[in-house]
Image 1 (cartoon, rainbow, N blue to C red):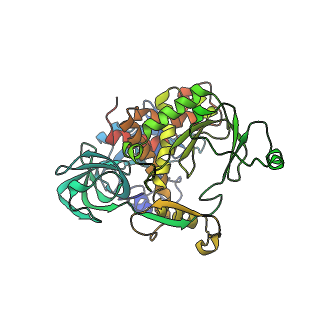
Image 2 (cartoon, helix red, strand yellow; image 1 turned 120 degrees about the vertical axis):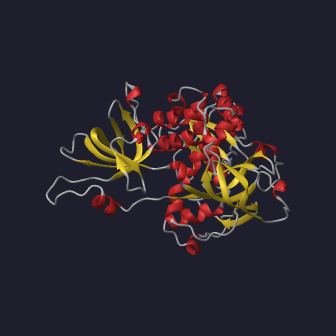
Image 3 (cartoon, rainbow, N blue to C red; image 1 turned 90 degrees about the vertical axis):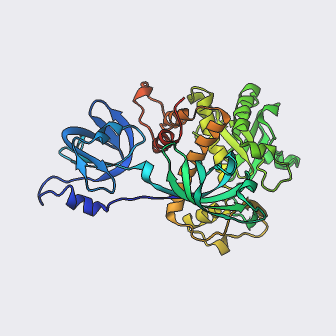
Length: 439
C-alpha cells in the first residue's frame, strides 16, 4: 500500500494568482483529473469535461507560478496525463475554453509505500527490487534498515516486505532515499463473515438448496482446477446469487494457464505448508454482472465468461486476471482489513463474531495509522502491481488500459474507437509511460 506526496497549489491561490476575473465575469473552473480522451488538433477531456485549447491558453507545471502560451508542455498532453485545468464556461453544454493547463510533474514526485518483494531484479551491491508495482533501486546513499534475522542486503529475498520512499530516475526506476526490509510475519485476526471472508457454496447445476438439504449431501468443495470439472457446477459467494462454473475445458484451461503464469515465481515455488503460500485457483464463471475479476480471500479468482467475450486477446485477459492476483497479494497486509473496517464504520470489537475462525494474513508492523488517503490508493496499488505481474510473465502491459476501456461500459457502442478511457486505464497509462518501454 502506498501514499504519494504531491505538490499542489491551493485552488484558491490558483484562482486569485493566475485566473482572477472581475466579480460579475463568467465562472472560472479549476478542474483536476486524468486526461481520458484527446481530440486533435486542439482538444481533450478531463474529469468528465471537454476542453478546447486556444492560442491564449497557457501551460505550466503544478506547484510553479510560471505559465506560458509558448510552453512545450502543450506537446505532452495525452491520455493518462494528470492535469489541472481552468476555463471560461460560456455554454455549459459545450467545450470549455481552457485558459490555463497545469501538468503534474510525475518525474519529480516523492513516492513512498510498503509492499512485498515479488522479484529480486538485481542482487546486492547494486540491488533492485520489485515491490508495490515499482522497481526500487538501493543506492549507496539510501538509508537502510534491515530487520529480523537477515544480516545484510545480500540476504534479502522475495516475500520480504519493503517500506520505501524516494523519486524515480529517468529510467523509471525509483531511487530509494529510505528503505526498511521487514520479514513476513503471520498475523491472525477474527474475520467478519461475508465482509472480509465470504462463505463459498457450490452445488451441481440444476439442483437447489432444498434438494441438497433433504438429501443430506451438503455443498461440495470448490474444485482445485476449473478444467477438471466434468459437469457444470453452481457457485455462490457470501450473500450473492448462484452462478455457473461451466464445464468448458478449453475455456477453463485458458483462464488457468494465464492465471498461473501471472503468479509470482516465489509463490509458485513455495511449499504448500508455507504460511505465506497463497493457493491460487482460477475459474471462468457465468455472471453477466461481473466485468472484471472477483478475488476471493482463499486464493480463488473468478472471471466471467461475459468479460472474456469482450476482450480481444490473451494480453487483455491477463490484465483482468492480474488484477485478481494483485488483490490476493495485497490481502497479505492485514492493515487492509482494518482499513476496510474503518471505511465501513464498523466497531471492530463488536464486529468480531465468535466461531468464525481465523484468517491468516501477513503484515509488516501494526494496524495503526490507516486513513482515507490509504483507502483511496489501494486501487492504484492493484493497478500498478498488475502491470508488473503482466510484464514479468511476458504479457504486454500496454494492453491493460485497453482491457478496462472495453469493460467499462455496460454495453459496447458500435464504434469502439469512440470509447473514452476510464480512470483505471488513465492511471495505468501514466505508469506505463514512466516505467515501461512500449513493445
